[in-house]
Image 1 (cartoon, one colour):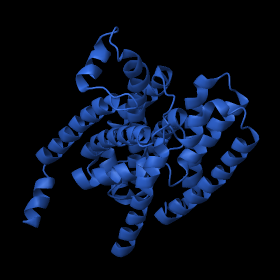
Image 2 (image 1 turned 90 degrees about the horizontal axis):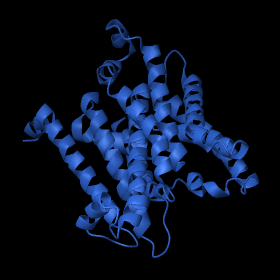
Image 3 (image 1 turned 45 degrees about the horizontal axis):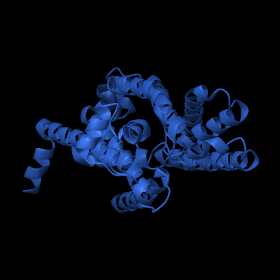
Length: 336
């Protein structure tokens, strides 16, 4: 029976059904999270607010909740895809933008931009992407010695993350006044998200998704090992550089909008892999949908869990992600 169940889970029909179910969950999560808050609405009232400019709920639903939910979902998509790619590049399921310090580097450059060029807020995504790319390349170089060592990669990432964390603390300490208008960016929050933020992250997310969905076949080849991949005609080092660039684009875009959010890039690819396997033709779509739903739901939990005020989504995700990370470490130890 166990073998039969495993065989079913490996079929294309099963994987397509899982992805379709995740898509339905995303739609339900979107509508539900738009309805829930300090003022709650029914689903029909949400629909009415979306299509009728004169609806009573229009102001709150359209101007406040829709951009926040959509931006939260896009942040989840960006971080999930970035984690998927990094885990493939490093062949380590513990790799993610947060655990190896990529988002810390993006946050550092973002802080510098906000302090030095506050009038150029629109360049924040480009600055965060640049910081993300530079950090990933530095970690990759530190861990490279006749090939990339997964253990060295994680340890190098933790060291780089700690260093950038110290730099970020220095900037927050000495330039608190200049960063006063960017409190959400500092703590990893979607509070205060408006349509301007949606328009800012949208092109970067679409570009990243477009490239990602051109990569599954080559990602699957890369997973066979460098020697086999090279024999099949894949230029592995060039391909890894492309993957690092795409991962940096996605991680930097998410940091520019929501600040430092941890564990999404770790949790989501792992759960998606358990659901649809390691074939990137299915892993990428499953990660996109899971990442969207996870961040949207966790942000809504943060909005409603306190009697007054919001709990940043990064805190809610950390409560979930930290135990999950320890579980993965324990499982890896038991298996090795």
